[in-house]
Length: 432
Image 1 (tube, rainbow, N blue to C red):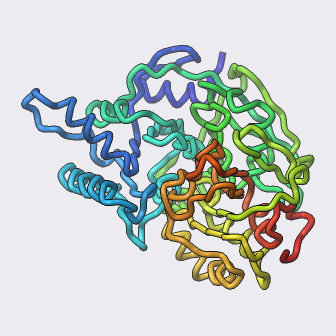
Image 2: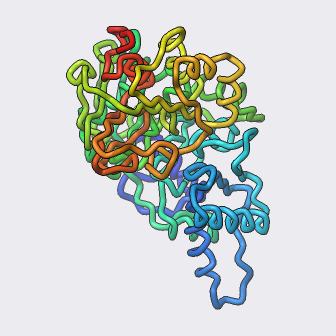
Image 3: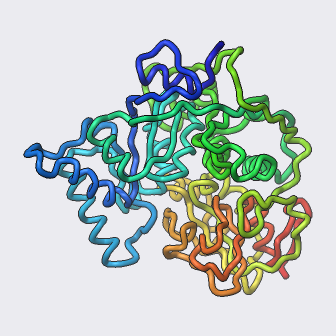
């Protein structure tokens, strides 16, 4: 029997000819990523060495990346102090893949890794963030781990006791209709299989729709694979993967391009016709409470967020700018835009997208995750309805358990900003 993508990657990472779902392996790690929670990892890391008389040192500093993005700039003295401790640790350990709070190289971790060429096809990537699943878009097995697990990775360079996950194959055919985007596809899939439908499995994306999808779109669908319970999402690397890594991320040299075996064994096969999809929306308070946007159209909203690791890339911002160009955000609506990285911010600035959005009434923020987890930069008030291109809408997710959060694509968010109510972008809309 042949191997799936994740089985092939884990076979390589463990030096085995084959592995199969259910095997327990300890793969070598190609990249280990943390954000501000590196402060928690650091505490566990130091405990491992406590009393040994050995100097605490990372197994390979070149394979560790740390990006400040969740609380930037620091919203409290506690956060600022933790960030200071991490900076000192980075300096001591010689970690070069460090992205501080800077306007020339900062951003959200799940954008920084791909755009800098840190993730390569066939690699094993771990991160102390559940949306580390994002990087499967580049053909990697990428998944989230806890602080204690990451501390052991920093010491050993391996992940201990990983059970090889089974795989769900998702085959997508058909062409998206106007204003239907990859975000709509992944929301539809989550609604179809449920928030637990892929528990402890990998979602492997296939089909002509995926093959013609940009890396930006692939990052979106793999990012939200975890919202169906998946350990990881993954797109087999192809010409688009090579184009992105070489032309946009500046990667040099040969890259592995491979797919699953034709006789690979899948736990489930799901088929989706993209041409039949309408814009989708995830309603409170679960990500799998998904409906066509038309079913909730007309719901008043007070705050709209475009950005995050899910939908803060250049094409997302372009979509919003095109819809809002020459128009105004409805009175009574706060619209916040978070480019996913400083590089994207700069590109959107040069192309005029940000000025278009600001002239429409949007507030453009620095790259960061603040409103998504509800730490700062846009918490919701009691009774507020938030419409967001982020990835979670659990009660309290955006800072207030007494508010409601709906999840949607940039097109739905921008169209709704014009009307002040949830709006199908195919219907257009003028200011309320």
